[in-house]
Image (cartoon, rainbow over all chains, first blue to last red; front, top):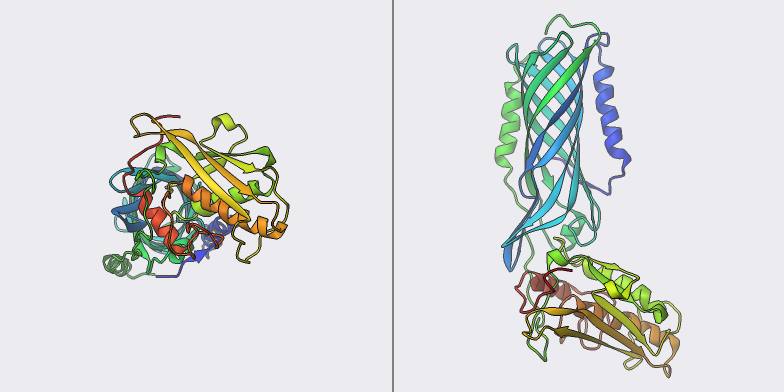
Length: 216
Length: 216
């Protein structure tokens, strides 16, 4: 797993997305079909922090609605290269004897994925990307000394069917994991990093542009 | 790229299965009593009452800056959003009022030099409902300075004492016996020590004997 980077600038998500899109658009089979997709779903996360102050405290985002934009390009054989960015937003909660809202939390997740078709309607993909935490409030939270950008590794499954001649619809499930800590947590004596697991479910529609590839 | 993607999936699954780490939290222990030494009562603001609203008298001069600094530094003590505060301009809306006697103190920036005892002093008071289980806001903080002392000594003293009194208004009613803690009876340091931070965190996860009013 990679190391965390801190104090990300606002331009970083855009740069990662641009890189992902560039990978998809400037691949060798540049004249082949490219598709643009829009997805909606929900994402759940495991605990970011497990703390103990008189009581056990678990800090994690609530299940969040997620919007995804994805660009795909066929590669040779059964493979596709995809670049996507997802954004989700929900409340960061501290669960102890009672549950307390810590702050609003937006997560940006740029990803590059390679998908392989298992059958004519089912595909599996390996995903590499980053997750960028953007809290609504930093003071008095674990983000008060900076917000982390964490590399992610993940898997995805997608069941898809043609809706019209140029549009495909799909159901998808994605899983990823990343390490999590913050500068503030380390300054307050937390040691190590927490491995955070996320799972997302959603639907997406893809519109194809250009000449259809022969293989898929 | 022609090999089956199963190798990628197995690799990612193995990574996920091995990834169950959780960051280790530090221990927090009380460094000094939470109770009001006179009444034996304990208090902290509750999540539904945040942000706590502070008002500073118009003639407070530098103390206005010290209150702002105090709110920032005490809020930064917490990791899970337990305490937040804002400055307000209408005293009728405030939960905490801050006054300076005998009026605007001398200007100047505080230094790391230890404050001179007697150049200033602070006092924080509060009222309770008759059954003594609810606070009746506002807290009243008064910081008084002595014009017989050098301006630099007054400014140094006012900074420490103001931030110390802010500590009382978040609920740290007790005093530390360690002069390196901000909540020592004669505060020398400029910000909460690790012991102050741990004590404040324990306070906010301990049921208080008095609470804020049920609703604003």
